[in-house]
Image (cartoon, rainbow, N blue to C red; front, side, top):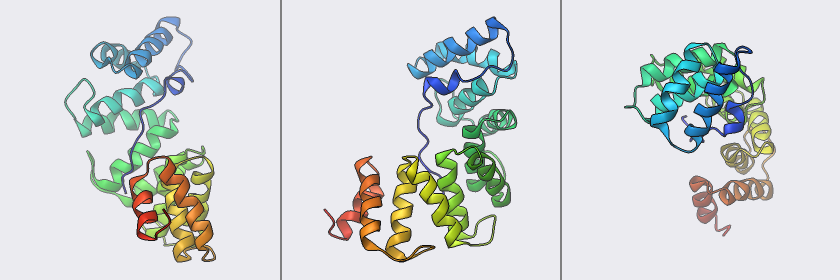
Length: 212
């Protein structure tokens, strides 16, 4: 179920600070800028200090460093630790990523119920990736009872937010009539939107159906 996780834009890292301490805010700002510039060696100590001070945005970025091996060896247990802290601090992106850890058993025992709960929390904040993942839970009956109608609705919300995975999955729903009335023209439109964003499965789907 795991989906591609995009590099977090610097804007997200600047959304909020855990306190009004200008020094801690400056740590986050500088650390996020260095992270975005892929200067991980210099970003890490700044992000770590801000994360240890309880800042969810810094905790999220630090988790991503351990998740993807940015400046440190990949360590999923450490990534889960910081995703958890950020998720508890209200970060929708962290809730989504932590949900994927539970869904795949990465750094934590596999727990589909926990994954579904975390995706729900992030989806409640309109996180597009989480909406797509929640849709997959409903479609496949993972962590919840299978519900194609709910799956299609989640994919639609993700797709309307510009999420390529959501667009592709909504297109598949229309193609097969899963939770929606079968409509190959609608399927083509949504799959094409995903393909235009570089979604490889969408491109292959279009080729298989001679839509290109």
